[in-house]
Image (cartoon, rainbow, N blue to C red; front, side, top):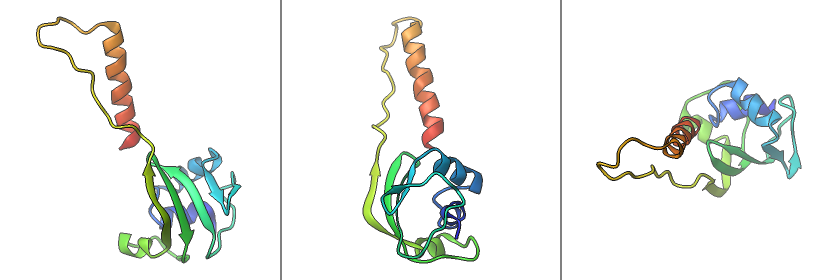
Length: 122
């Protein structure tokens, strides 16, 4: 089965296009070897490690599916070898005391960076 299709069936990504971006971005390893082709073949028993949604996943493929089913069906396609590790540091907004006036350019950049980061994580 194609790797991008399996990631979509297992509900790690919302679309196959996102799965292809994850794979071609060099964020997927199959049995320890780097894989950058979305059309790569996946077999039962293969170990995958990849980064998705700011988390590092290390899983073993337990099954292949013919269609994208419900979440409980998708969870039976794999088993976690390690618990997903959160790679993103906790979010904290810059604090300003009341009455300090307008934010400085540096403050605005920090707020913009925080807003952009929220879009990526969700």
